[in-house]
Length: 373
Image (cartoon, rainbow, N blue to C red):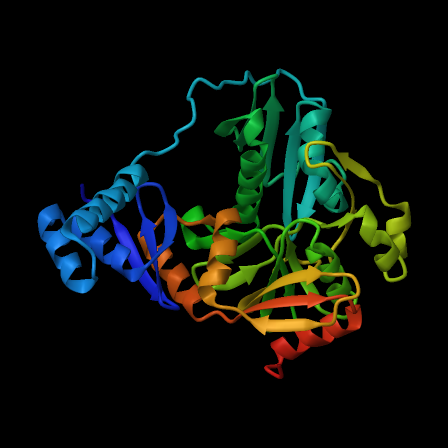
């Protein structure tokens, strides 16, 4: 049954990582102990006897607990591999070819149709450059009625069901990050669904559910001389540096009134309707232009705009933060990188910030950067 697991105790809870499916679970320390013993093939009766000496339950109840926990190890081996029958024939011609300049890299992206363009181009339109033969990398995106395929430098990366569009978009961004920063996938600790703002020395990650004002807060902080490193896709390498990602900031329609005085160019920006996500957005280019900036992470802030709210800032437990952060993140499946991630996260200050006054929010974030909170 041996299944590589890594354990870490944080805030009176245990985080357990299963290698077989790169899954994290937050459980009680007793559960972790039982998992470890089961994973070492210790007899279930022996484990049950040990449990009854630690907690006041009957032998039958303890044995039932062991059986339930054993199911966690078994389920971790059941990978959800997607069908290998998905195929998309590469077209002989593409509807559109666009060129993007990022740092000193020229990227050619071929799109089979307007559908593929809508999935990628809007957030990178500000990087578009003139057609050139001096291409560093070539991406191709093509789909049919059932699936979408993606190739890099003439090698098919993968094919996804149309229900898995977000996996395709994530992989596109991951390949882009690797090319920009010249790091292979095994050199990344993780990618987080967050916004990253920097004071030039450190970075703060801002997180929040859709509609909580995460991107709007990022735009406000950018207007106050902070640097936007990334919006929605935040890559952190195994040296614990947050790296720049070149996509524009996604601005929803209900944020325009707040942001137009700071960014009048938004008034004339193209508007994109994403029916699948039920949102209308415009894109605001970041004030980070060379995309070389990288900084360590100072703190994690779960941010929420709430009308007429006083500013409320509370430090929260790392376990609470972990349970919100991990489900929307890509985390490296390599054991050595898992250990780096857990070591990093265990020491990371985590906050919950609720606000309605923009100036107070900006002031509070500034204080976190300067250890004045």
